[in-house]
Image 1: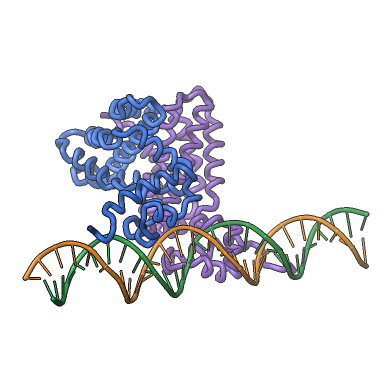
Image 2: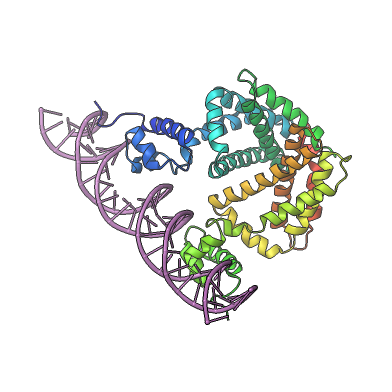
Length: 187
Length: 187
DNA sequence: GTATTCGATGTCATCAAGTGACATCACTGG
DNA sequence: CCAGTGATGTCACTTGATGACATCGAATAC
């Protein structure tokens, strides 16, 4: 028998999402979350850098999955084709649990601090994709544009998916949005 | 003679930028800034909602200027043409003081919290443009895409301008980036 | 089988951000 | 002259976040 219960990180994650959803992010203290998970506040900060981060665990997995998919595309293909492959990978990772994503999305969009964190995660993702594109020989400016455009497609499609029926395919939404972009962007 | 010196908001802004640049954002306390500006910390928070916001005063002026320019474009023009006009307006407002922008940009990109704030300001801007486009009859999805794409162009061009020579024209950079987008976004 | 080390946690102290309540005092309009 | 206004100061307090040190079960070494 362990001195402490296992899976503190997971319990903290669940408790945080539940409390944020129930009473709101600002009305929830770290002490509340920790006590709910059966640990102390100090332990919360050993698992998550701050009160926001507990909602964004797993973002490295998303990034790695997307970069892997991007790398798998032959360099002969254009930058946007590579980005499209990364978006396909993201759809698999993000499009699993519609209900959970909805709760999480509602919590995040209800609070500016959480929105900020979400945005910087997306920006980091885009920067990583741009880096990868540059390594493939894409000119710096084009790499930034393609990666950021991909992030825009991801955000717009994900939001549509959240607001739509649970059975809709996030991947199809992303592809449709991706196809629409050059038409809208044309003058 | 007034009981207190005028222009506390401006003095706080200058002191904050200087101290953030000298010792770094995290190494600067609100008390430091306030004392430098000859007021108390409590007064700092009466002028700026938090320690980050002092670097983002004037973002409403930028938003208003861009929305005004967007509105001036005849609705017959496509959404991207309207966004382009808004970007032109932003170039006038943002492209004035290269040295100051560079210092500010260096401070912001050196700190994740400040980056977050910058990103949410851009996202708010994009959301406002998208709203305006929808009012002009642009379909919701296209409006989001066009506005977010415009924000991408602004960010990429602004960064190039910051890293380039002071005499370069931000407006020209934005137009060139804008023209490049549909080519990159095409599969 | 006992000793040692390791790792996740608890405890305590402390700092900085942010906020509410109330006092102050120069200026302003009557 | 006097009441009211507005920017500020003062004080008390909550909460987020971090460093230092202690604890104790478990794995590992011997």
